[in-house]
Amino acid sequence: GAGVSQSPSNKVTEKGKDVELRCDPISGHTALYWYRQSLGQGLEFLIYFQGNSAPDKSGLPSDRFSAERTGGSVSTLTIQRTQQEDSAVYLCASSLTSGGPDTQYFGPGTRLTVL
Amino acid sequence: KQEVTQIPAALSVPEGENLVLNCSFTDSAIYNLQWFRQDPGKGLTSLLLIQSSQREQTSGRLNASLDKSSGRSTLYIAASQPGDSATYLCAVKSGGSYIPTFGRGTSLIVHP
Image 1 (spheres, chains in turn orange, red):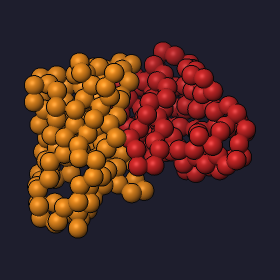
Image 2 (tube, chains in turn yellow, purple):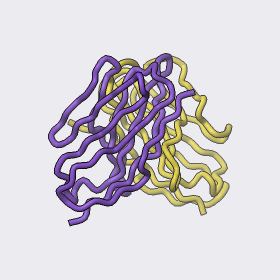
Image 3 (tube, one colour):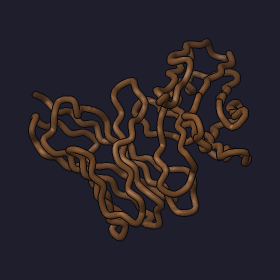
């Protein structure tokens, strides 16, 4: 079956521009996570969606970052007025639910480069 | 706050060796622990998930153990192959949190 997909796979943008990153989770998965992975760093949690509940935005690094999840499926991560320090790989993961033993399945990531 | 540490950060072994990767965590009240591999430029692939009530899980040449009381998990790879070369990460989901905490990973190179 189809896994988690992300688009674009690569994005190069100029400092100050806005970017949108898309994540298509596995069908039926109610939990969706966004992470950021910078060179030489571990995975940094950004935001988490569970069904129709209010998202946990506690990991967003600044108010330039926002995310939506429409219809409990596709999610979009938006970064406004991009800065060079935003350059990283942005990973999306989904799981059947958020509690207990459920396995997280990751997408291939979007590599963002801010010039 | 849960903290996850992986040792060693990097490992290089000849093909055929059995090896152990370590993951330690500070808060033993966990829901589960998951091991992933990440190939360069790729996302994470789940290898094994151990629930808090379990002691170990096995898949092929991989065996993961969990000792909550000591805050440790090990990933054992038998008869390593060059195709096992990747970064291995562990992630701990703690009680009361839906957000897993990831270690920084162990970068493994298996040379022919």
